[in-house]
Length: 318
Image (cartoon, rainbow, N blue to C red):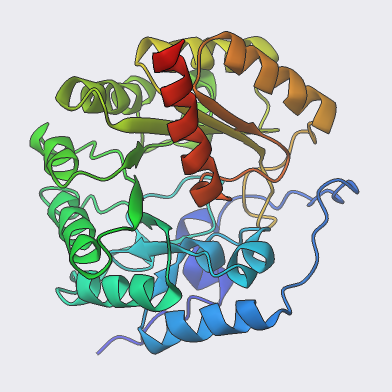
């Protein structure tokens, strides 16, 4: 019997990055530094996650906002295990061969959502290229389980790209009727070979377009990281591509390097530059934009969902 992997050990967590040369981690500018999580709300959320055997992307991806979000009882739950079949150069989630799906996980997620009293929940997952449907049915089961336990909770899913599946994978998730369907493009197409080598830019874009074809009223959302070496014009072009796919909500945040083996930070984008991206995105017709150094896909997602609904109502009445 093989020894279980220790996912706290960087070498075992990211075996695909072992041969990569180390790159220095740049000192963060003052506008990115955050306080260590110490609040009682953080501890309470942590306990609920552990008591229900749940994994969160907040921890696995090393999100800088974990103290703030957990302190408010918000957490983004990561389903289908803690090992991803992809090895993106920016990502801190462990890579390798995942375990079998846990049939009881959707129910445990639903219990945690109820205990936390969440008005809005974000469900994300690892990539599961080992599954015929990429885990689409498991995502759908989780949505339905939350609906049964907490019918007033709005649900946002941040999905994999289902690259090796048929088109019915996206249909399966849409049919479960999440309130927001999020799939991140992550970066400009020219950087995909080095940043997101297992993915395809236009395939990911097509997912977002397909969701709107299946349900024009479903909110769609996508996100970008900056500071990876992209040019501003490239970011603006991705915005245009998203709008052509009728994406409603755009998030843009600063990429932060998890370890010396990950993609290096090419530069820290200033808050003023983020403001220009925000203005440009609103000018292109997005209903909602969150563009700050610490923006992440699920950061303050509940508050942003309420604003998104209000923006659609305002547009319909204008």
